Length: 239
Picture 1 (cartoon, rainbow, N blue to C red):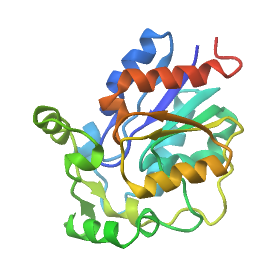
Picture 2: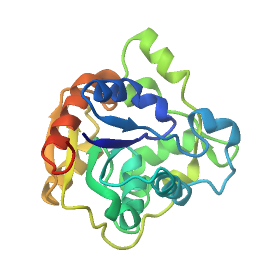
Picture 3: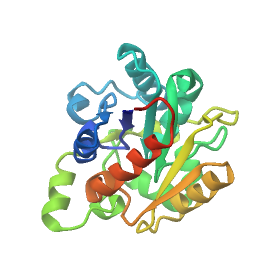
């Protein structure tokens, strides 16, 4: 069966994949969900203003190396699309496929903030604290509804480094593996992510859709796990 490596988005941690990982395990797969530097249970050890896209890239590549992962399926969500793309050149020999879940594809030499445009930049500026951290967005931005569920989710978020949003991506085009997939969350009205999905289709990604807001690993974990398992079933060598 397949091994999935699931990378969380901004402000979160590996915990966000727990329900999806449990369902994948029930289907016979292995799902690993590392937590990036300064996030989740590593928040107490946040490294300072130098923490950004490059450090997160190293988190992912080091995880693959130290866990001796081969023929894995790399799953990126939201912001971590940029991290996984930055790691792609190094990780490509270790990957069976990549799956982008409502995630960003890089534009050469441009930062997240530049790709997102002026409205996002204004929201970002309003949430900066201590000059280098960004306070989490409100629950609706993540597509998490319901007072109790939203409070549970928000209580697990931590500030994210500003540099992660302002660091430029690599100048060249990312070379994605042959087996590349994009999962669009159709209940997410974010126009930037809709544009990313359209761009992914133009780049030859196999397209999938889930009726969910931005965080299906929380709001539709069974449906997401089934999509991931179906992707694994299309690959050789995962039995």
